[in-house]
Length: 299
Image: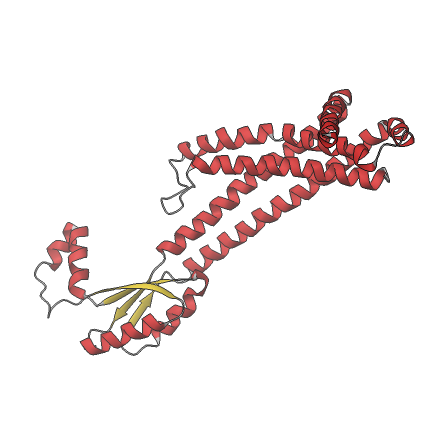
């Protein structure tokens, strides 16, 4: 019961301190708000870039064209060798007749050209459509398949795929780096702001120590105050996430530039990001306050 009374008193004192030192509190809240807006945007961007990369990985396929001179037994040998490769997740074999039928369905022009082709005159090739486990190793896997006897051509969008994956990975790392850097900056700003608050209440703290107040009793209101500042500072960023991302998603119909780059659906994504922003705001507020108390009050 004593602990609950002490915590209740700390919360009450923290709220009083926020309004009593309103100008300093406003400065802290403004810094937290601005920083958390950038943090929220960075989190939204980093998660979407990660989603883009995963979608590309799902759809990326190595197309293996088998030489027309290859017999059926050798096709099975090629299949076994592809199946044994460590980076191969799955594959689908399509005979040249199946490829022909699919192309005829896709286009009336193709249908007109191919309708007279029989199994002997069909110039198309049997194919394997191979999906890999790790897209970063797709080039090595494609080169291994090329060396298999009986394989005529291997295609997977060389160059473009490698560049796209590298670009997305770089953007993702930069976004996460920005989030971490901004959190550190926010903590630093809160430390300095709380330090000013502590200095303005130095006499009050000295009296508390003289009457025998424990370190916990002195520090707790400041830590709670930092948490409150972080919570208030997160209100605008959370609104930006909830309403801004929804508007952004609807404006672009759920994808950027092309259907290949799809945005994450708003629900429940925006709620999870909002919780993260609130959590980061409260956490950095508490850490900043705790650091200021420990370093500058010497309690």
